[in-house]
Image (cartoon, rainbow, N blue to C red; front, side, top):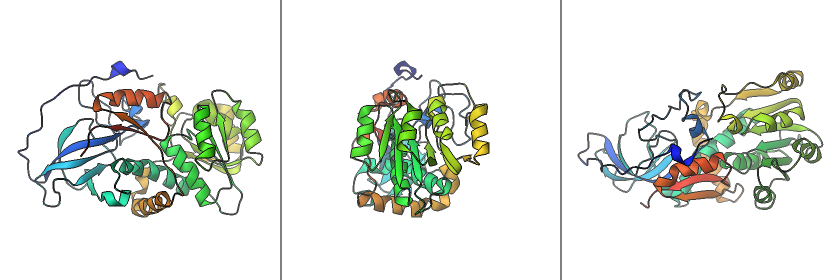
Length: 336
């Protein structure tokens, strides 16, 4: 389990404003804190798109948003809002050469209701939405039941709402506190919620999913996922998005199932394929438009847990790994 003292906060020199061609100076405003960053604390992250953090070097996380302070690029000006889905450093000021493939791009903040932190819901929202659409195989009118683990997190909460919008009729979330359960069934349209720390998960699943389970959006893996898979119907589908319960263990990703659960998967012809949203970049533009439409109309609701200060970014990740967030975990670094 990560601890606060795994991280050190340092004061460093302000970057040179003598910029090279196509280079911009960026000020970080918000950082996205994501479970996948726990994998960056291992020498082998398990995926090609994530590089391991080097001890003593500036952390390079996942998403971030900030503003251009100075530009030597013809298409970027001071004050432009910048976003990157991957490789945003945990630092207040930094320079970046903007070329094709860097991932850094300009964002029209008006599209996000003028709220800078909203931009960081984009990546996790796309993961949830495209995951359900591409791997969930939701069929409108089929009265399908969807179960989401890690349901009170950023990805899980959006995935469940998208599953209903796509046509599921029964939506059940699994999370780790009564407060989170209450949020799912009062503020969000979940039909039921299970507190895995207090409830008998097998029993509650049977009560809340009397017709079995057709779609499982898996964010956690481990015993919880075993309980869900045991009650999945024939020809059902697992959206294998994350395995946060296994990230502190020395196991491959995705972790192999036990023999009995794998037998259940085989016997019931359950699909359980690794899902990576970066394999669907051609879907990003339409999916972004659709997701923002749903959010603006109130059909998808989002929530943020905001930690103040760059020096607390490490603590925010530790808290996330202990279930301390509801919705998207962010760090507010600075104002524009």
